Length: 289
Length: 259
Picture (cartoon, rainbow over the protein chains, first blue to last red):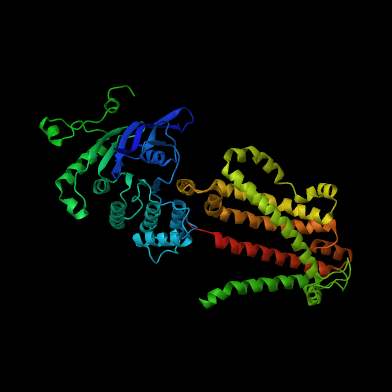
């Protein structure tokens, strides 16, 4: 059953020259089951972060809507929480204060002691005990995003929205924090919608991967299943044939900019067809752009 | 390192000595009672006035401490009232870009008006010279805080407001935990400019209203041709101005944050 449903969402922005509108993406429709981890991949400008903001209620869809547990959501709410690419921690608050703001918001009836205990629990969960009283400016990117994760998980949202959460973290730390995310997610089993342009990250973390064509006027090209059993480790993935197949598939899609006509590479080779540059009509299914 | 640290204060001291020397040299030739008094004469007056700053021998003869306290009392009343009004209005304007644009022309016209220009209207309407002076201070310290607060609130990063929206913070909470702390550096910068212009305006206002205050004192001593007192009062005004600014400087360091 669909937990979160993206129902034919279209987004227009005012054109930069002030005349008319630019369509960022059109008619995007898919749904995510409860507890499922779905990642959207696409080039910059395909509107994936915009879609995430629409789900979060921070932006409005131009057409279509977002349905959570059978009810349309148009505004921000505690049932959906975002982890931001740039962390978006309050720089005037300490680590503990940033998380406390979220815990208090999620549990208005709690006593000071209850809130404090919960804050300490989430601080410990992301390994930041001892850094509670530091401000974000004194932390590395990886540590800041740990605070971001703790803040989001501490509100126990139904849907967790991850907006390129590891893009600004150095490669070595990224893996560690991805593992922490998986650990926290397996304990809480929130429904997750993540956007990224890191293929490995998408395969490592996701149950399904949604591929967007290039913007403007981007479309959802396809959604692929990641049938690699969990728990997954980076080390085991390296030799996994399914991982390699998916990786090639997604990378080819990204390089060619749209749907690779037959999904199976063998067919392409045996029929002697070369990858072709995509035309607009390929994306729109023959209708004029 | 130790020598490096001493160098700048040493230069400051040297500049002071040179300035005092020039002053003494330029006025030293004139016979006593004619021309400007030199630094030694001012120092004598200063030590005399500072030895009993709070005496009160009637309306035209009060210690400099009492005069300064009178000025500071007016300053703080007008300044605090203006700050509250300016911050409240600034937050409202900063959060509402269209309202900001709508009233901005009026602010731009009102801002460059010397606060003293309002004095006749205040005297006519409230008929109390001390309250009129406070209102002059109010006008002088309103605009910098208002403009800075509106700017600071309007330029709060979208991300912080997004987080507040996601967490469904109530309006009072959003204001106290997000909007005001985010805009605090800009607001305090405005408060700092305001207290400077208020302190500048109070001297002129008190020269006009008379009675008490450091501005009145300067004018009264000028009428008595007591130039040593005038010069000492000028120096005292400067020192108080520095102290007021330093207080807000400390506040600004406490509220600063790095992103």
